[in-house]
Image (cartoon, rainbow, N blue to C red):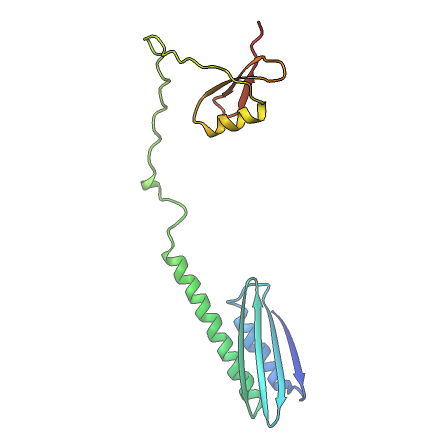
Length: 181
């Protein structure tokens, strides 16, 4: 894990740096590979304040602590961050445990349904529906066709008064049929 140390208004004690690196290295086992840590130490009047930030993927953990000694304050802030990370890891693990599995067991597989039989053609006479084709532009005809739940739409092209039939194919595409006389 990449770790940046910043000391403002004081000198960073090497033992504090080693302790923080060791603790963050152990913590990197439960963090994503791309996690980055930042440790900022500041002198504030007679105290030292430490801010530890760990940034990973889409989540970040932050802990602050202040006190008289660098080592004690840094250890406290690192323990807070570690507790946050472990709590988050446990929550994710628990969510995964309760989530339904994405792969089904072979026992629960449903056998394939037999193929559907082709519809039998009607033996009785078809129903006659009379339609008066009205002059409509192609774009308007497509719009009306999609709006109505029909399989065929008959209209006249206003430019040449020719009869047009708009229909939907089995694959879902729309076609225009222009009968010639």
